[in-house]
Figure 1: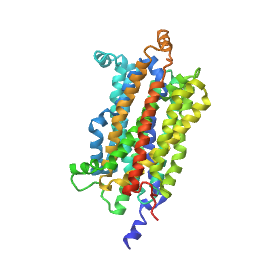
Figure 2: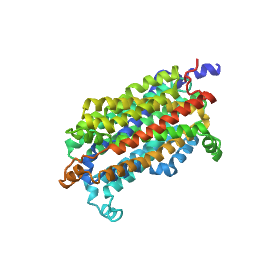
Figure 3: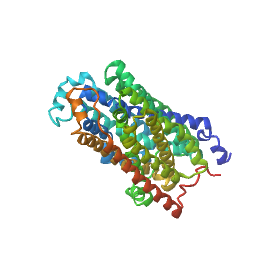
Length: 470
């Protein structure tokens, strides 16, 4: 039997098996995305029940990325390239669950009465013990979540090599983003029914345990694939610093990394404040109603991403899609900043949220499948992790920046002062300046995307070429 005939019998060449593998790893990210934003739609409730002001909430949101910025993601890339997707995926899923448990404990009523919480309140007194403990758990979760993201990307690249890679990555991102839609839908409901911010976090923590189980099932499939193809999961070559040097010396790598950090800095930090922004910019709506509007943001992305991935596989135009996505991003944030407060139109809010979701489909759908075109496969895991590392620098500092801006620019806001003095559950913040900052990130991403397309035309990286080779 020839080698070609043998390869045709592998799991990877079975459409049912490779798509099953995709679903198993995507479920882990689906539950991870739910946990990331479980507190976003109940920000106002966190302020009233636990005293988390916008700057405290921003610090908590930034904590997800702190350890990654300090170098963990680089280590994660080395682990991924040298230990493989199975070991790294199990490690990342376990860290996500462990971090979630710590965060859950930190916000419980029980913890607030412990001696440890009392000790935590003796230093950095502006940050409540609940926020400190939640931030610690979120840091550990963030390490696992970002490592899981790179692991899943490499796993898909492995299982869909020469096949529907962009479609597969697009579907994985779509499934994950439905998790954001789900949590923006149910988190306020669970919190309202249970009368506490603790219940939604507990619910998502259990889901992360299920995600760990689904990835474990995937590892058995992946081990069988390696046995069929004769590929080794672990690399025999020792780690070389020159592997990272090869990546870091690449001009196009830095262009992609900068585009990534600028674009995502206007997306993920915005998600943390988006529901509250809508409640502040649309008079008379409740937190639940604002969440119901914002939840359509990931749905816009989830619906269109697979189609864009399929288009990218068959027709290409990846660099052009990056430009279009950045342009949409700019328009949406400017509408939120200047048009929505004047019109007070829920219809405008819905349509702009969906357009932002389309932007969020265009850029990632084109960005991540482009990385294997510019980076050698043997250091692909390290490349993904280095891009995520650069991205995490922005994601670490931007939520804190937005929280501080929101607090400082509203210090003399009469409506905010009156609401705080009255002990109101909802504080009507003015989001204009933070939204302008998000739009500015989009402008920079737009300029870099144009430069990337020009560079691709000169160097021939193939970013505008289809992924499926005929």
